Length: 427
Length: 176
Image 1 (cartoon, helix red, strand yellow):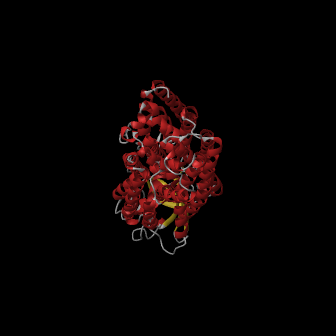
Image 2 (cartoon, rainbow over the protein chains, first blue to last red; image 1 turned 90 degrees about the vertical axis):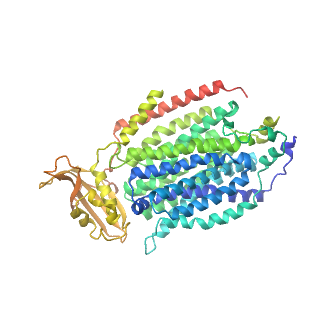
Image 3 (cartoon, helix red, strand yellow; image 1 turned 135 degrees about the vertical axis):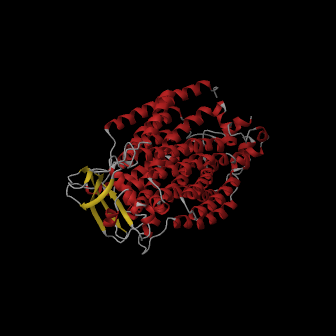
């Protein structure tokens, strides 16, 4: 056995559980932030003034922050995973505070843009750490747990909205951002005790470390990795375009086109989020057993059916079970795309590859699609004139290509041996 | 392929920049503006008579008084009077205190205004059989059948484009 594989002692289960908890906050607050913005959108537009089209633009500009976060996320290959995690939590906490203080839409958009810079880099480095710290047999399950926190973030928003509905006064949308500050500070303190990942530390100890390119943003585009980055990138772009626009527009659709109250849509979101979280966990276990690609295809088929149906429903009773299934399949599949974007790459370039797949492809999908849905579905001037139909059309147009590219071009990585991959690189 | 892409993007942009205003959208914007109080300037979409009929205290109350705003699909207007009524749009608002107003908005313009923007000029009691989406009525808007066909064509075009690009990239990469 070579030094690169033998050197670090395997960390115990207790440490890995702690890592899982501290990393889960990354995905939790990403879900919280995205759901808060879409959920309180109608309130924000009422308070600060704005239209559906402007809401689409806000989402687009905020989403650009995630794209810019690509540069920050890529630094994990240079400065290490742990240090970047600490930077991102501090930055996001400050931005959440700024959002709560927004005096107008422009300020809110700016603060949320910066939030996304930190959140997006935190996500990329978090899934990289999971991939590197967990043994192959448990990797899918761990990715499922970490990514499931995204919907639990959404649930937290729904629970808060439901609870606020019982208060005798109207709660400002700003409260949602203020409440996030306390756990963020506690998690930031907890992350200081984390260690650098075993794989990164092992690579760092090799003589080849100095020789390898840890800085170049284009390193994942070397011929050896190019086709994988591109195919995973296309898959994540298309999948997230659908998931992000559905997450962004569902509350608006429910409130404006189905006639649901803010508090009832919050309750639905909370209930559906719980089932959705199960979708992530099941995906994690299934992909350890059956492989990444079959599970992804099954989840995308579910997304096609329930995602299209969800935005055609005007019956509030039917809405709930379909929402649960759409979230379970649509968002749950991110556990698999997280594996797609990290496992095929060696350690020295993994975080940059994940950043490319996640930030440079996935996030633009989240910018373009909600904007297009907003323009098409605008009730006043949109050519479709219905957010529901515009959303269903988007699902029909984007999910089949996602399934095709994943099946044909993305490598299966269930049995990927990261140590062997690193050994091949340092030779 | 590049030409097709440019045409699709241009079509989307032109579609997004459409200036024709739907009466359902006018009513919805009016109610949302009304929900912002005086700052929302509901007079852009409706007469002050109509605004006051829906929410008498709208000029002085804080924003966010409506818990539910729901607008249905428009219907032909049977109104006869000094205004030109284009359509009737059913709507419903529920205030935070639970009180509900279910009514129909008459959307049109004055006879001597020429090509003026359509506005809500009054509201009338809701007629039965013109349901809101939550009552089983038609949705506020819907995509024509052709749009669904276009969505399938976009899916097929994306598959073809991705396949072409990925084959080209794989062809140029060294074997590992």
